[in-house]
Length: 181
Image (cartoon, rainbow, N blue to C red; front, side, top):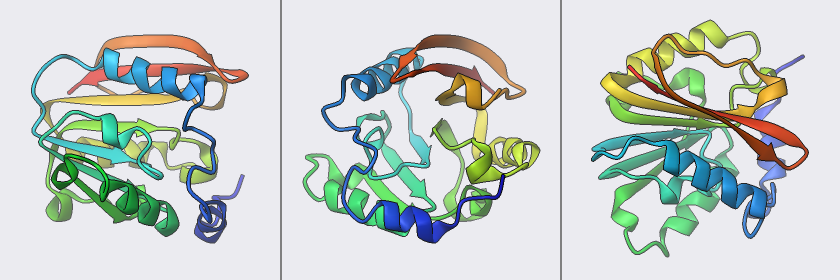
């Protein structure tokens, strides 16, 4: 399967919320499942990889939250949404591919969240590269949370698995995994 062209994703984000996340009970549950699975502790820096228009990002804990997405249009929508957030100064959005994320530019994070990104149409056969990139970005003792459609990806990271939850999501099953490095 070829990697989806960035222009296709930008065209998809011609209007806000193209996935239909807002006011969708499945996506409300997805967000709540993710947030409830995170260990209760203070987070200094959070990275949301594949943030889209910020549907999950604006609910994440942390003093500083950086959302990145390969779609420039999605990032524009997220930035626009941030202007109305009461705590807007916590959020920053950047246009970047997962494969371009480097700790030298972004720093390191004590929480990394990846939802709906680790599919072949977005990362090709680059799973092992993704694992190395995440390892560079995640601080020792940091938390990694991934959430994906179970049938589309067998995600596994080489960290301590703190939680794995399966729940119905639209016509699929979501697999939420929380790790500690």
